[in-house]
Image (tube, rainbow, N blue to C red; front, side, top):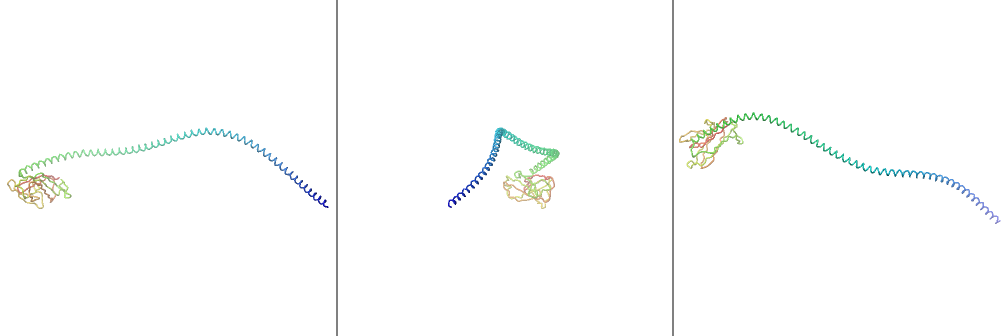
Length: 307
């Protein structure tokens, strides 16, 4: 029984092993078929890849040749590029110089235009000045003729005044004491305001007279009256609001005078005397005399003219 049982087990085991061996064989067969199929596929892929490799190799060779050619061309181009850069730099420098030169030329042209405009303006100004000067020259010629006439008139008046002064001086010398005379006689006619001197009769408002008494002999020194008389060229006293009537002795003869001003002066050996007379009314144009008297004679006189 046990032997049969064991044999049954062994048979069963063998059957199982046989089944397993068959299954394994079947599996191996399938795997082999699959592997063979894969192998064929791989060989086909390898063949394709070899073809691709050959093509790529050929392409790489072509590319290497092309690269070599391009490298050579690039070297040539680099040289050409450097030359081109130099050429461009030279041209740019030339362009900058031309621009600078052009700008300088434009500036010079602008300056020249400004100078030309200024010169034209100066020319116009000079022409206007010349025209004015020509007109002024004509006016001056006319004025010169008038002035020449006026000068001749003034010379005549000056000569007349000199003659009048000489005549008056001769008369004064005849009437004055030889050792008691006034000197440095000065007459100024002033306007009313600011004491400005004038020679115009319509503006005359005040007359100032001054003179020196020097080397006065001792016998004539002391307190004496001194009179100022103002007359026209004919010896007629001017109109005065408060005329001063006085008597003086001239060469031993008593003479009546009408004075405009009077002062009591303590005479010494040397002094300068001055009188101021405000006119009561306007004087007319003409010649006038300012005469200084003392009680014993004429001290001196001076003529002046109002226009």
